[in-house]
Image (cartoon, rainbow, N blue to C red):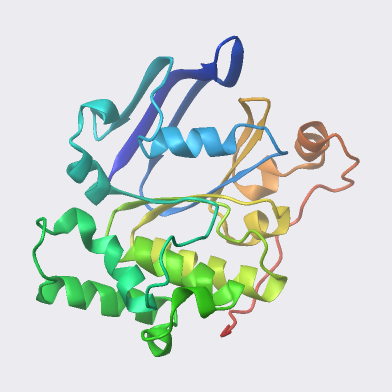
Length: 256
């Protein structure tokens, strides 16, 4: 288990504030979905949560310790971060890509050990890509790439996962597949904090929804209240009669 606390956090560049006086706590497992229009501050909040940015004021602490004070390796063992670009710089195999998730647990220049191989196998099974182990990452479909990148993140066994738009550019079938993977990780006790654009995905999968606009949190709670008509209308400047109503989802087996 881990607990991540934002206390009165501001962040910006120059006179432009991207996050304003934000106080939040993430703990206890489950999925927290961040939603909001472009420029709302979702990516900024996630980078602060991963320790990639430092607050201009306020603090971000993991289990009571400021993230800035944690050694990089220790922080990487506790927080798994997935960036939104979905790319790999080298044409490596899928298994080698997933193996990068074990970097926080390995000593420099040491070969993978039994624990590493077990973690890699488990992550690939969880994401349904075991049969892609020998394929080059750059030959995969968009849905396969998304699952491989999530497998890399899961291989690190971090109790907190921070994912920025892992469903971006995927069709609805593969969006559902990715969110099913995250839901299974959350059921196992992992705290998942994920930014999504699709409000219906947040409504269906998230235990808690944060709605953001212009660097501030407008609503924080279950989808039934956080995605109400009033909140959605204010956040997105649209009419949203009835808000976004969660619906029952039948689990899917998604491949390709």
